[in-house]
Amino acid sequence: MSVTLRNEILPTDLTAMMRWLANPHVAHNLNEHRQITAELRQIYDARLPVLTPLFNQGGRFWMIDRSPERPVGFLRAVYGAEKSVEMVIAIGDEALWGRGLGKKALREALKEIFLVMRKESILVHIKHGNTRSHNLFVNS
Image (cartoon, rainbow, N blue to C red; front, side, top):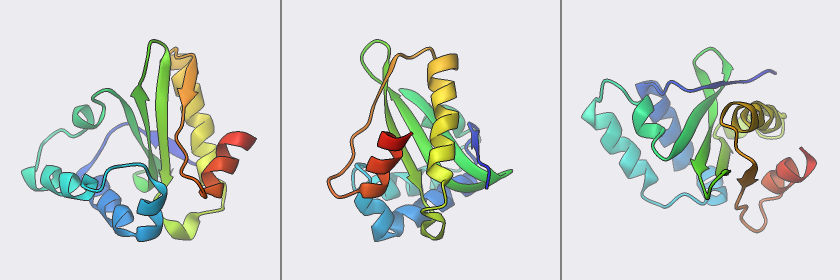
């Protein structure tokens, strides 16, 4: 399975993210604050014509797609000190966990972060016990 990173954020992406974050297994592994689903709902309800700039404030945000506009997760790189970014990666569709999609998305993101954005380091916060994320970053 191949993946692509898509920078354009669509209203349908918001509904997918809300669905993923409603899954306790997905939400448990993220360091995102608990109100993120409510904030996504407010953005969706506002019917904003352009969503991409909103998601790219303070960094870069990509939808992880398995095929064109078929999101399976998201990846965010938040600007940090000088030449660093803090990364959050999530495969939201639990049925696809363990199939290498996170690793493929991470490789694509590393190209963007190091070659396009010209950053020098990446910081990740992994919750204790999240062995999938730990293995992803240690083995990539």
